[in-house]
Length: 219
Image 1: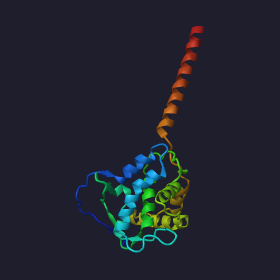
Image 2: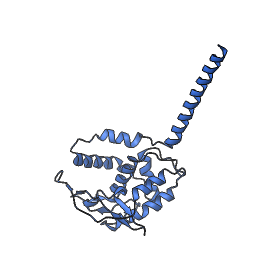
Image 3: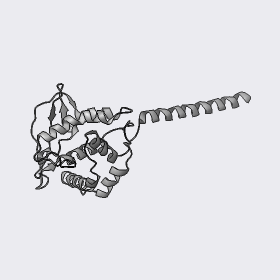
Image 4: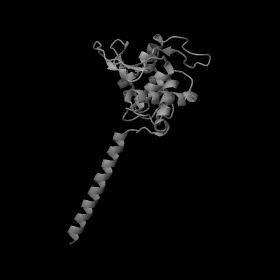
């Protein structure tokens, strides 16, 4: 146990075949011109899986998620969800458990953070600008037809910092987390940029070689 409010579950679990939901999401986000509808297609069964384990009303009058999950589902993010060949979802590697309930909104927020922190690039979305982790969370909400909960961001960031502090036993720098969330810019097609740089270097090298050859001939 890391703290009275957090428990570590180190138990054996059956092997699950399929593909992680996280990998499917990363693959989509790397595709140039991806659409919110495609993101929604991947996330909607996941949201359904969360709501099937939730208590209370799913949403309020404004459409905002209000359902709560058991604290044992704090790690039920796409990295720990397998999509089987028949499309069913199975959670695995649920290492951490909180004593207190967690909101479905918080799990979606944690999911967006985990994706933002692990992707090598997020290509251009055809429907909206997705440049930062904050944009990605907004895209997740829009893809699921949920209202923008920008007013809750500070609390969600605080809770994430608190959770990371309990897991790592190290103080969380909330200001640094917030800065990364709002200002970090995703790479777009880094391989293309790297290729362009290589071409420029080759051209410069050839130009220098030709110049040297001209000098040599003139001598």
